[in-house]
Image (cartoon, rainbow, N blue to C red; front, side, top):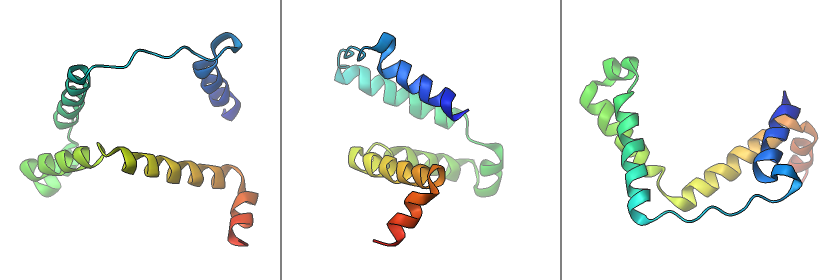
Length: 102
C-alpha cells in the first residue's frame, strides 16, 4: 500500500518522468471564492453528534473558529512539518531512537 502512495506522489509531481509544469497563480477573487465555498461546505456538514453535544449555534461558531485558524500560512506549514515528522517516526522507528539520543 505504501508503494502505491509513493507512486501516486511521484506521478503527480513528475508525470512521465518530468517535473510537472507550474499552474498559473489564482487571482484574489478566485482564492476568496474557494475559501467561501470551503467554509460553506464545512458549515453544511457539521456532524450531528457535535451539534447535539454543544448546540447548533456553538458548533457553527466552533467550525468557523477552526476554519479561520487554518487560514494562517505559517501555522499550516508548522502543522505540516509536525505531521510529517510523526509519519516518518511511525514509518521508520529507527529515526525515533536516533532523535531521542540527540
